[in-house]
Each structure stands twice: as structure tokens, then as C-alpha cells.
Image (cartoon, rainbow, N blue to C red; front, side, top):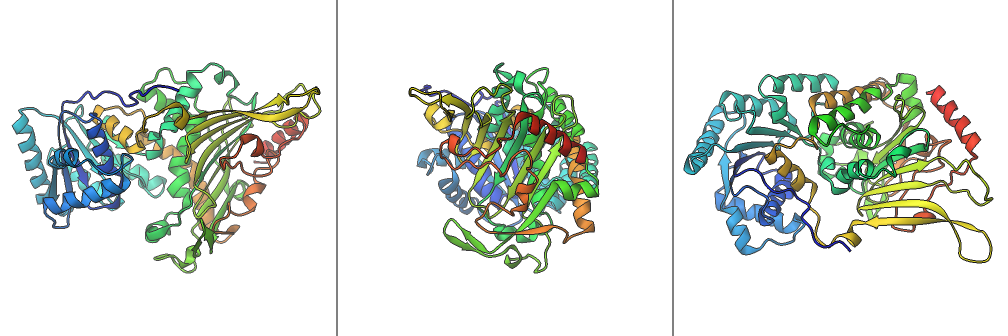
Length: 530
């Protein structure tokens, strides 16, 4: 058992003003303020800071703080707030009422920030978080620039949430718009998946342990599955989701980011630009499909009525603000290839869906079968399983001898679980990322060119579906693991998607027991066909 240790880096900033646009929104209530509060009580925020919360609703400071406290009590990983600590933290919060579209809102905000900095007799770091609908990004960015609120590239930062554009053209336009007003190093495109503890640990796991990296290539790896299954429905987000869909909402950002981390070459250093360069290299090598290849390599689905966790769920087309004849996908399973020397011929299978049987985010790396088949029951290939949620776990499936008088093999597992190795509560993704922004650390944030290349990968898929909106749109029952057609794209590499249900890994390995020569031939056939 490891003793308690500090996972968060020590603060480097003495003074900071933090502004949240969208102060009355769900993101602020559920994620941002609980994250800032936890950073405060763990002594990771600057010694002097102030949080300015901007929104158009007219509320008083006391009422607003009480509302935020409800969010902390419900959603903070540390549980209900300590009364004294909350009082100290809440005293740093100021509500600024104003319309994002009006100049006077920013004049008022500027006066508040300057008053705070003048009192400290110091110009500190300024952080501006855009927790707003995409339509407000350009408006707020323009105002910050014109008011000279965010004009020091070494001290001032903006944080932009996804979705960043709705397609390649809109993403390019937004990138150009922001780049005319801010330096690239001031812009933090946030993807909370990159702040998750296990996601960050993948880099350490790969590049700090020489036992794995030499095997991390097409000579030893058969295929890789990256799966993000969600139990939730679209809920109250029907209006947004019906114009977005699973490909835009999950694949273009979260899952392609995970793919980059798994597939990237070793960067020259653990430094932001080196890591970003390695990730962009992966996206540039990802095969771009034509229309025919899209329908061979991508399966889309939409959930029908069913039961999830014992609760009835209605069909997607019956959700609020969803068109009754909608063809928007709530499920995507796709096979991608990275045409690089390291990964040529290795398929990367990506899957995500809503109203699935269980909440689970896993990465499964399946190795090729042993070339030395001296045991007749050597039939289970090695697998490395990285569970990101709900459990933080890394497991290795391998063959071993069953105790006894005869040589009999059985799949066994070696398992590392965070809850067994560490006794402290792990920071939430937003805590790690917000602290990085304050410190000017951009390693876990996407660069503008990375966002555009991710759009380039998915645009042929979006275009194919737009031309044929009903073609091969599958239906799947809520509470299932998605349409059965999703298993077909795995062939001949696997019969079904890997699922981790907190049972022994040896009982969960999919049946992939083709002979090594047959597998090699089949891989070549699939690669040629796509």
C-alpha cells in the first residue's frame, strides 16, 4: 500500500483573478465551483485570488453563493462543504450581472478586476472561462480583446469548452477569429477526458516502463478497442444533441484524444508542444475514408425504448426537443487505421453510445497470438485492459499453469487498482485542468491544428450520413450494448466488443482464437478492403 501523497503540483501563481462566463449554468454549478473549492481546501489555489461570475440574471451575491453551495454539497468529491472553509472561499466570489452582448458588462467586469488587483498592488494572472453556448464565444472574445482585459500573453488565458465548431469550416473560422485576438499559448481548448487520472497515467505507463513500449507496435499488437459507454440518455439536452449526435459529441473529441494518447510516438520531452506534436502526427496519419468506405467501417445507431438500471427509458425520437423523424445517431462504432510505420495494418475500434447497459470507459489492447504453440490449450491471447471509469484499473491477461500434476493452462490476470494502491481521494479532471490553466501548463489541452485535424478525420463520415441520412441507421434497445451490427466490424479480429463488468478478466476475454497464420492473412485482407 502506498502512503498518502500529493498528486497535485504545487502552485506557482501568487495572485489570480478568475472569471466564469455562464455563472448560472449547469457546468459552473456541477463542475467548476466544486473543482475550485476543492483546490482551495487542498491549498492549491494562489494565496490571493478572486472569482468573478458573470451572467445576465439579476441575483444578489448572498443568494448566488447559497446556490453554489448546494452544488458543492451535491457534486464535490469531498462531500458537504466545511462551514468555515466555505465561508472563506465564498468571500472570494463576486457575482457580476450583465448581458454578454453589451459593452457595459465588460466595463463593469474590468473595473472589478482592476479594483482587486489595485488592492494587491500587483497585476496577476487572469483566467477567463467560457462556460457558455458556442454562439457567445466570438462575442466574449472580442469584448475581452477590445477592453484589453486579456492582453498580456504571459499572464492572461481563456478556456474554451467543446463543442469547438460544428464541422471543419466552422472550427477553422473560430480558430482564425481567436488567433487574431490572442496568442496560441493563451487559448486553452479544454477536454475534461484529458484531465482524468487514468488518462494522464497512460503516458507514464507507456513511456516510463520500458517493458511495454517495445511491444507497442504492429509487430506485437493485433487490434485496439476504445469504448465509452454511457448509461444516461440525452435528457434535457435533446435540442443540442439532435443537431450534434454521437460522432460530433464524443468521437471527434474524447475518443480521438484517447486514440492519440494510445497511438502517439514517444515525445522528445514531457513538454506541451512536444506532446501536442506527437498527437497531431497520429491524426495526420489516420486514414481518411471515402463514402463507400464509411459505410463499410462505421456503424451508427439510435436508441429505442428499453430499461436501463431497472428504470424504463423512452426512445430517442420521443425525447424532448427531438424531431419525431430524427436520424441523429446516439451510437457510433468505427474502425480506423493509422497509416504509419508503427501501426500499419492494426485496426483501432472506437465505440460510444447513450442508454447503454453500463457506464464504462475502457481501452483494450489485444496482442497477437504466441508464435510458439507448444500447448494445445494456449488459446487466449494476451490483453492489456485500461479502465478509465467507473474503476481506475490496469489489468494484464496472460496464460498460466493451473496448479496440479498435469500441464493445463488457464487465463489469469495481474491487476492494478487505484483504490487498492492509494488511500487518498483522487482529484477530479476539472481540478487538474483548472490548476494547469492557472500555472500556464498546456500539456493536457488541445492545440488549434489538432482540433482541425480531428474534424478532418470525421468530416467524410458526417458528409456520407448527410447525403444518405437513413442508410444503415440501426436501432438498438435502451439498456443493451448497442446494435448487433457493431460486432460485425470487429471481424475477423474479435467476435464481440470487450466489456469489463468487474468480473475476473480471464472470464471476460472475447473469443479470438484463430491461428496466428489465419489472423495475419485476415488482417491483410481487411486492410486491403478498406
